[in-house]
Length: 146
Image (cartoon, rainbow, N blue to C red):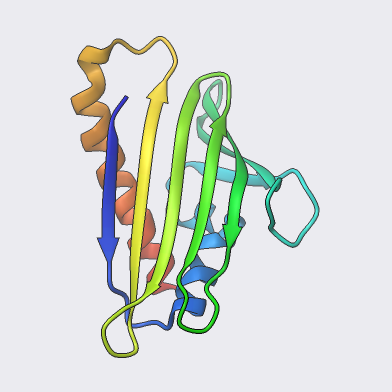
């Protein structure tokens, strides 16, 4: 079960970085071959559930997530969102932390523990490498686009 973290310092105030990273439907534009379906009514809060479906045709995987911590940034305080992965295949958790950074920038820390049911531990290195690249690119795209 690989655990990894990514750090970004976008030229955005924390509330804008937070908005861009936690508007779940926007993740479909940032991750190729992925659709997002929010299962609970807006606004996002603890208990919000959504599904990221990735793949083509019959070769799809559902990543079912539930928000278990929802603390948006406020004033000088950073924000934290924790997602628990509750699918049949994709398991683990993700945290998105947005902190005040240097100057008018934010400091974003994306941490994730990812497990794929029945995938042997011998594949952990490849899974971590692939996940780090995919989620790093997704974070970059989300933070670039308004």
